[in-house]
Image (tube, rainbow, N blue to C red; front, side):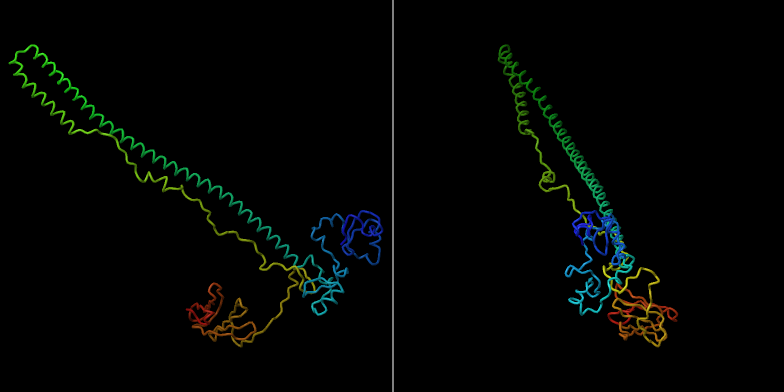
Length: 401
């Protein structure tokens, strides 16, 4: 391939610079207006295909790097080796492919390649890939939205739990403070009542003191003697009262014992909870129109376009059973299974047409189907006098039930 397609390849050989306007796919070089006219009239090149240089520039970069000439011998590819899936020049055939049998003309291989099944399958595969990418992208976008919504939900749940905890602790605090105030009020009332009693007793003591002073100054000795007993009894009763207060009353003080559960909150509860990522199975169903990807090769001599007219049915093999066969099925290992109604048997044949084994049925077998989940055959009785379904275990080669 020419290193530059902007300039005419023929003119460059003449050390002239002219812009190319077309590209010859056969010569693999660009042509200017003058050279294009000569190229289209020359007997050797008049049948060559040319495309506008603007169209050639639109081709993918990796395709522009593909050369139509053998890199080893610098000759144009003419032959295609189907065994090695490789285009070859005449010298390559002699040197490297002389023992290859599947050698075809390259022109026959590339004929109608733009409408070939292989290219159409590649296009279908690309469409499927684009659709699947869109599905996966949408799934991931939905996942982002799901994560955001779930985060908001968990955040609100954490805040609500915190509010409930705060409300509960506030209520516990309020109840405990009410208890504290109530106990204080009761104790204050008792102490105030005692203080009032002591104040009255103190007044009585002072009254006795005044009386004794007056008696000593004003009364006769007989009067003092007689009143002493009365005063002594009063003072004695007051002393007994004071002793009873000392012995029966103690100084009261508050004490507080915290609930261990509350005390251990900071040490036992290290977190509000734990946030984890749950891995859920992906529910994306990828588009898959083909069981196998298209092969970028042409295995046949000619590449036909996709058309029902190109489909030809051929008889691969005839198996002469000499019996009345009502139905059949093909197993994954290419074995075939047939129901023999009159003989009341099910027979299994290998891919060479030879009998592998047979199973005697309890009733005349009619239809049959393979169950891949447990590698069994389900056989129905159909028009038999008995109505039943028999399950055949292929591994044990006998009915299961």
